[in-house]
Image 1 (cartoon, rainbow, N blue to C red):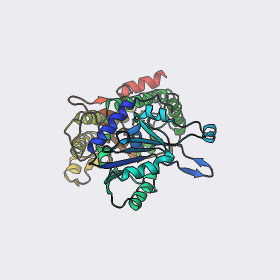
Image 2 (cartoon, rainbow, N blue to C red):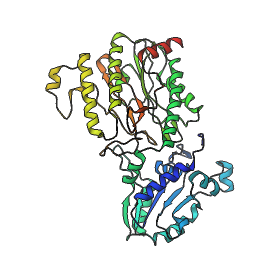
Image 3 (cartoon, rainbow, N blue to C red):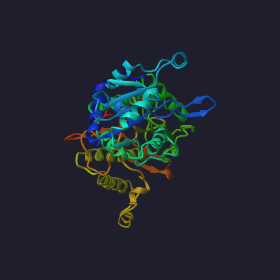
Image 4 (tube, one colour):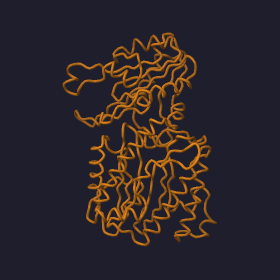
Length: 431
């Protein structure tokens, strides 16, 4: 791995929290992700399943975590199964984790080779009555393939029909939504790497530069700072492209007088950051661009103040809608009649600001986290309002990552990333 090692204490705490919420006499299994083929002998870079990483810190394919808090043998209450290295693997891929290394990473004392899984698992299932399967019920999920977890669940249903099956997602969603201090530190590291990338491109962007060249500058800076690269597919859209919310082609020329919207951020140790900044291609905002930009920034600043323990996610977005409505009225983009006659299901402000303002952040860019219960301290959210005016070839979105505090203003993990108009213009001019 490129990143520095993470203390096993984090994963020990995470497993304890999981075990505390499991029903009596139950086993939970978490598999690594598959390695996906692209054709011939090529594969995509391996991405660890976030749940097994969250619970063990093991960042290796073909690994299995077993959690059985009520196992009769204390040494079998937490077991890690990892792939054993052979001479061929060592030569072609490099050695895999040894048992000692797996214990050091995870804090799990009992480690078996993967080939021993079937026999060990079979014996432990005879002691249990319930089985937790690792599923994905994220509100944005759109899985169209059979995963390793899907195949494992089929086996469980066939081989252990008398066990009561329970989804682990509700527990994992609740746990992962509230971050440990160590996790916030890792997210902050990803944010700091993102800052370096953004400052790099402030001296690079000028009329005539291609969007993909900017993407390359970010990639260079991210990789040289121990990141695997982008936390998500980068959006780098100039001119009208900034009005396409998920524009990812990044293949157009940045032209004089246009704005450039960049929704791009680094990962670090599998943790994501999520940043959006909008800058003038030529280094100077026009008066109109300044007005719209400041309106977006005003909404972002005020929306951030609303994030506090006890706030409901839906209610928060209603309040942000009111903030945006006020700014759009001031800009003359909507009028009072538009507001008075608006459809409550699609308010007037949605014409220019059609997406949500905040989502959970963490191991996934759109991370696990409950949306139907009150916000809690140490939840990490994005704050990302935008105004999109296609007829003016102008799209502006600004986004930071913040940590909810027990009391007071949320901590902005991106507070050092330039965002004020004067600072951006000054930095682009000096570079």
